[in-house]
Image (cartoon, rainbow over all chains, first blue to last red):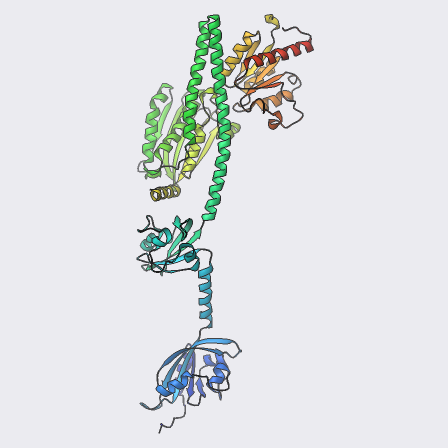
Length: 486
Length: 142
């Protein structure tokens, strides 16, 4: 014989307690009647007084099949269930219900069931939206743990790099067996900051994939990161287009260069023909002075051939800069030592202005040597051709705004606007027969190969300053590429 | 050819060896020769005296031969001087003056010689131009 259920009574304190709860609360009796509910419940499901729970929750006329409340009445066990109902506006409501038995007598039967529910429609929607975003965002996303194992990834990532379940990121991204050098995720684990870098991976078909990866710690600020999120943008197509553009420019430059080369060769041939003609005429006339004049022309043009071939080969070298850590001060000192005697003979004051303590930088020492040699040689020529009495050439290096800077400055001839606009043209020279017109072009090419640029400040009659600006960031990228290639 | 009647030729080329070569050839054939190593220097010569013929290089620093040629043809005093272009910019058979100077008001040059020149053809052309000039002016050069 079950205990007689005590009528539901609520004190003022209990009522206030129910009201303060941050979710829907309702009390149900054995006949499915809602005997008590807080305002939150009423706001969600509308009027409840005099209604059965199945009417209020789901708008039904009879109890729900497999009613969880009745199960709790029977066995007195707390239950947590996912339910779908209808709110007071007739909208579908997803909610989680926590059902607890209430006893009016200690050790007695379950007289009422306390139902605490929370609407999870928004949470559920957010989760679905987040999942869609995670999978469909046009970039590869992977989350890795401190062991560099991928614990989660999006569909785009798996489509590109293949199955990643529990595998190390370096195996999946690059099909490597060891961690990558200069790993941005390792940096994020170490300093808790965001890092970005250009990478080349291998996709599941074995093709190279160029991507820009940003790594960020998945943690609150100040806490040790346990996971890193890696978001990568695929730039393979962009890289392909860039390579095609570079190739097209290279072919155009080859055409221009060949035309320029042919022009230079014709001039040399003309000189050789001239020398031969004058020597022949001298022999015919037995005129030693004429023979000597012709011979000089022949000699000069043979020398020009040598210079042209040497400069052309230097210009035509298409390799990437072979960078290694180099002290810029040492380079400058080396160049000044090399030209000291030549400058002294021409009464030109050649000086090195170095920056003590300047950090070494990844540079191709041979390439930079060629650049500085060309610039110093030009400056010495500009001084010799000028009417300036106290000619001075300064070679300097310094650090400025994250750049490594080399400068060659002279107070020689200087240039006007028209001349300045022509100096980077293939085979353009102001030195008549003495120059091949390839020096500055080669210098610019090497500078650009280092990710830098060459700028000129010049004024006719006052001198010129050539500046090679090399951003350290790009130099570091070259070093990374060189190490990876090795 | 008498010295006082020798036609005067101005050679404009920034390559000294080319100037020496052309000077030697022309002197051997009785021409009086003056040289200029740039367009600016040539303009200075032209402003002081008027040669009967000009041999002009194209690729020169600062001002190109085509620019100087255009200036000459725009000048009433210099317009009629025959100009032979001697350059390596194009092969003789492919040379098209309009590729370089599109202004139709500027007439094409009297001739184009590709470096290195064919000496016999060069002398033949110069002689022929000089003869035309003398026929026009009634002067006797050769």
